[in-house]
Length: 237
Image (tube, rainbow, N blue to C red; front, side):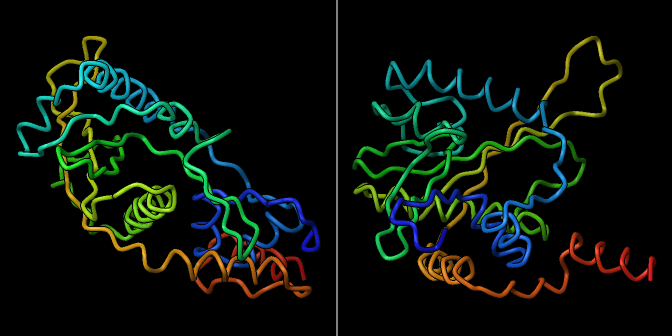
């Protein structure tokens, strides 16, 4: 309820949801009507889990991963008591109470690294399989950039000195092997991204204004879900 004094939990993914389509966001968060669900990307989850285990071994030893050395990144995996909470996107994540809206903004990071100057770096793991060069320029990957910037914003709000430079660790499944042999091999690429979280505050306030409306907001013109509903209703009339 808009009048409730209890803080309202709003995840990083729901902010992205709002940016994609205010109407779908309103239906989901205000009226409890969810979009059709998508199947889970279990291979991506397996890659995430394996990478986290690999970096956690070096986190305990406070040593750099060979990939970090190969890319000239002067850092080690960040050792912090809340790391497990920060990576738990379903129940915790990195949290911040945004007092102006009474939203608890949250998001689960994949990893955080630390430089010798105690500046922390946000890291996100991505699994894919493509023969094209890995880049961040595809249309759908713009959401990846916003994802990083919200994580940077959250960690800054928690009092950390956060580098503008974030890193995507892309695991690209090889499809040119002669035989499967019961295993999938990956090429791993690290891509830097210079984040700018200046938009995040405005987006949170706008999402709050959206949820407090008594009238449902308009759909985004390119929302495939809303357009499907319109076409279906038109076909039935």
